[in-house]
Image (tube, rainbow, N blue to C red; front, side, top):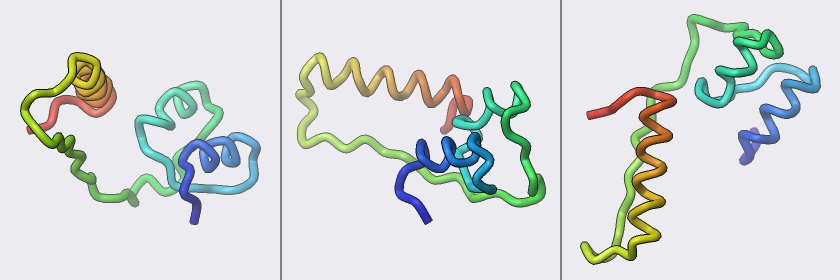
Length: 81
């Protein structure tokens, strides 16, 4: 087990074995044939992601960051309901 998906990705790219990485994280590598999916019938279930804030009054920088994350996640995984 590892607590760094970036490290797992890097070890896979260094041919140190197989590992579990997020589909969005691996998409470019798979397209470029630097990674190969070895167990296509197997996957993790989706994990919900939430943003919790203490109040409705959120600083503009925080709101911009949350909006950025939502856009990036939607671009990678598609809109979720």
